[in-house]
Length: 321
Image (cartoon, rainbow, N blue to C red; front, side):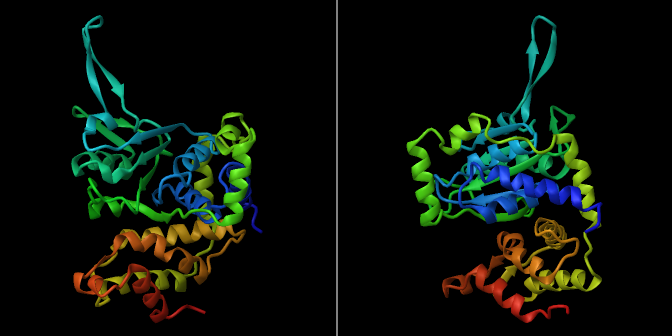
């Protein structure tokens, strides 16, 4: 194992272990959240209420030495409620910036589809450039600024679907399912005692494995994970196939190609390897491409799903040997 890969693999394994002290039975979700953070991107988390979406992000912030803020999106939320605003200070006779919750390291945008498009778009510049403009002045955000936006997959009344341009800014869409019986039983037993997940986090059971300053250097070490040219071509072919599929109205763009390559590289590091395999790509294809595809209405009426379309594409595109 090359020594330049060992530090990030050690941190990823320790981060995994710390998060699992609080989050029960969501190993795949934890891994994908770590992939988003360590590649410098953002994630969309979809799950019914009560599956610990907020707790997951709070725990990640604690483990990775970052600040945490949460925004509860509602229909009356304004862009300034997210970014902040300048307030006139009568004592100093000048305007003072009151920073909004976007000035943090890890931001949970809870039920993001409950706010209208104008408010949702207040996050776009922050997500893409890690900057925010307030009254013509541009302010820098943390270089580790990461958005985890949540959606409720069941309740659609009073919601505003995310614009395609904004969905494309999220590297991954993670489905956070209800835990299996064994995990739910463990959770129930812990809630009866003094070791509930929330209490464990509040009591300091979870320890930081790095500081926020370490994260940038660790991200660069992912560049030492080998991605063969044949695998790069494979990723490009998979993404391009979404644009040529008969059942797809809008396929994935070049940003999806970048996201699939970077996430596959991080997944290899999580698995303890310094090289990417086709299985790394396949395991992340639906999470990376699923929220970017728009199916043709006539196929949706027939019951065709995005999962089925991506499955057929993976069957059709030749896998490198």
